[in-house]
Image (cartoon, rainbow, N blue to C red):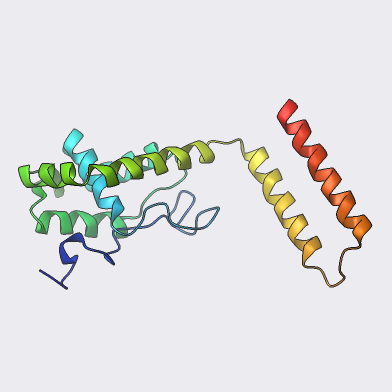
Length: 180
């Protein structure tokens, strides 16, 4: 299947990426939550724990990430189809929904790629911890970043006195946060 859909999960196959805070569109902080193809190992791991429908997998990933990211059906279902085509999953249709189960080949693939799965789980843990920060703190950090950026990229250059004043304010704020 070289060069075909998925090319045996090789480099360049995009198994999904984080695109949003809750709805699959642009996530705070930029960058990818999942590297190319990593989501498939997460899905395979979830299915190994419990046979699931696609919607259940979407909700399981969302829950695992503290509600901050919900993969879209357009990411989940193609990944499931590819895993099924690769023989890692099998499905049964019940009431118009497919129930996915892992195969022995899927278990072997999961075992072979355990390091990738563990790295993905660590990334998800960090993402969930960050997503669970209080909104007031996230908003204050965003405002501070925006304000500093605006001052540094403004039309007029900062004087040395302004630079020193801003640096002192930031150092004082850091000290106060550490003490809080």
